[in-house]
Image (cartoon, rainbow, N blue to C red; front, top):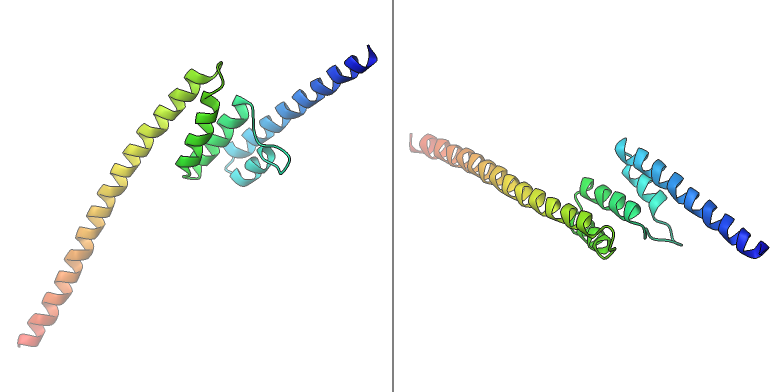
Amino acid sequence: MKASGANGLNEAINRFDRKIRLARASELAVSGRLLEAEALLISKERFPDTWDELDLLARIRVREGKFADALKLWNRGASMPTRSATAHACIASLQTYAAAKFKRDRQIFIVLWALWSSVVVGVVAVFLLRGLR
């Protein structure tokens, strides 16, 4: 009986420790200290295996611009029966965001390329006109 009581106490302590670590990692992530938050979630001995840990780590990855890593983490969370719908919603949201970001980045690239091209053409025209005099 004492052994099962000790196991129950150890499990409770481990759950409490995980919740405290998750709360601190969340606090660090919100304040922009992403590497410190990540270090609390991942160690050599363990990788996040609860939905809350996977979700927070995926959100950190999104803030770092590592969309593929975030998708992998949420896909892992999608295999958890109780969180499947939430994970799929996160995945859909990220795909929408990534598509919009790609489109916006592409438009910015096109505008910058057009400006750069105009400057080059202008400089070449000035040199040609000066050379013709």
